[in-house]
Image (cartoon, rainbow, N blue to C red; front, side):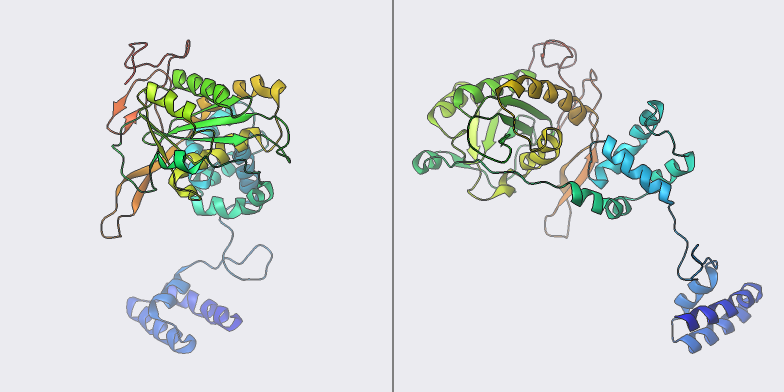
Length: 365
């Protein structure tokens, strides 16, 4: 490697001053001496001589400064630790807001420009250690419903086509049990619309039908469209006679995933992690913490639904085996009613929890 650098350095000045014919001769000599191709030789001769700051003469100088990576970690934490692709889409909106709030004092404009220039892969690579250190694990509390009752519910598999209209939701619960399942602890019900990605959360005292149906009614009042279908796992909190009757009274179709196939409900399973666990962590919450939890979800849904990009399947790639093509989009701000073929972007009214549709309150689709 040292001989390669020395030969390249010797030819670089001569190559820069040579004519077109002379450059060709230099390339031939360099290819013969190093056993490389002409394109590689041309690249080595054209790139500037830029040894590393430590003086070992290897490679090229770093593109990003250490300060830009410290800024990356700071913004990532303040933005609630999104994945690299989400963070890349959020930077143009979040950086000016954080700077105006004084959260980025001590960082220079040059470091901010370097952060804006970073790609998603670079962000992922430099956040890996920090992300791995923050990764925690929870306890599963799902108890399967009886087989005869479970078999009466239609199965919806991963990849089954939907009509693309809002109202087809996936549901799941998260147990805030801490390190043990003993005693009574809060559960958070998560509802995600498959077409729009709209996410709602509501916590209940336990997973009984009385408590969960109350949480579901609260979500139903807030969500800006009518729930048409309800897909869940095989837990007994969802598949029981009371819940089946409750959904039928509201003309809501009920489906379920296959046992031990979390990918059938991948949309809501992802929210369990980056919405519920990220904000409520893995702590134990009991009855005194129920109201603060629900107050937390009201704030979280504003950020998740109005200020976080939504990544969902959009169209299909041709010639690559029907692989879904994902697109990153942002929803409209609060009060801007907008309907499209992929669903509503109009949020609910700020007061009263009534859904909106172009300014007509109390109307649902």
